[in-house]
Image (cartoon, rainbow, N blue to C red; front, top):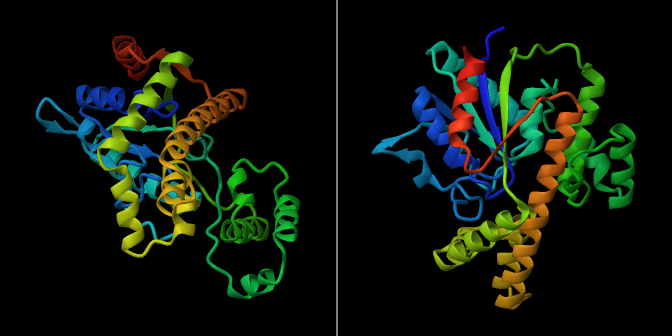
Length: 303
């Protein structure tokens, strides 16, 4: 089967978007984002959309699955995979090779490993039944259904816990063999950045965003009706800025703590990518400044 997808993944601040845009421009391709927070409108600086990077030599490279829902709405893995396949199919029908760019390991793996995900509509009867259970009881029920839970944040939020239980019960009820996913044959590239350099890039990027409107972005989201709890659920920048704006943290505590947790997040991303490799997903690693190698290797694999 001819390669029908290029994937460029990497930790936050590694420069994967810039490289992906450059490659897409050379190939006449379009980008499909694999980022769990960039789907939300109005969440720009905090999610690192860097929309200016999609303009190259006066031309804008099309990018899909960014700014597709409001942050008040829930978005999940099933919805991402469904929308990815829709965009993927539409691009191939037009003879365009997609370039998937992002760092959300679960979204990347759902496509590359062909996760079979059931459509689990909200079950009001089940939700009423679960409403009377404690968080510990809900966690135990979810872990009984899915002992190897990848996304540990599902265990921390009541709404996510209940939704995940709905999904797993639907999977068990309908079975995993009934859905046929499109065949994906991807060449996958990982962007590698030395740890000290990545820490420096994270620090500089955070400082720039704090100076150029990140605080105002989070304040505006709350002013338009997004609760502090909802902002907190997005983690990282939104969690720390929400706490700062509520005067639960000083500026220094917020900035210092945020830089640390973003660095920890980058390490977790790399751990996830290494786990993907152990599961059989081949990743070719290139340096953040190795565009020529990336392009040449992509050309080899495509022809």
